[in-house]
View 1 (cartoon, rainbow, N blue to C red):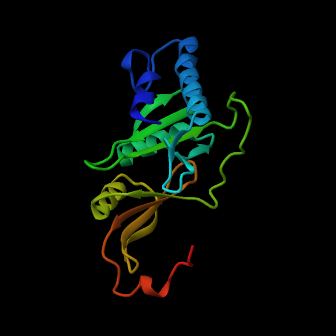
View 2 (cartoon, rainbow, N blue to C red):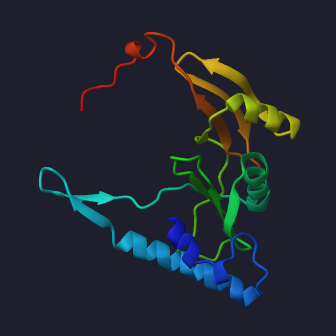
Length: 197
């Protein structure tokens, strides 16, 4: 979601945890769901140079189903500086501000017992997904997460393909790959050409 949508779904400009009574919590969530429905039903279109319409994506973010959504919220706010843009008993929407010139990131978690329609999906089991977070200084963040006792799955390593990286795992089971772009070893990517389109 864009910052504009985030602002319109917050009561009185609030962000983060709401102190509203239970009935009031569902109003901002209803705004989220309506905004999502409108965004999905009215895609932004433009013409390509071939004269065919092309759709532009307004936002794209993972929504991870887990009973540990608040533990995951705390993990990303503590270790990576994310902020809770919206949260309810079964849904957490996090926003990670970007450095100057970058767009930042959005990440959401949903409890498996959520009341939204349609139902599903099943809870994430920790397999088949890596969430990559690109930072300016992976070594500094590695020291921070180590000092904060975050689980380190892969130590800080300079990879020959051009990344300084380490890996951790969040409470929902997501493998988090923290990367800093560095120069690759000369000729590394020459051995992996992509097929022609």
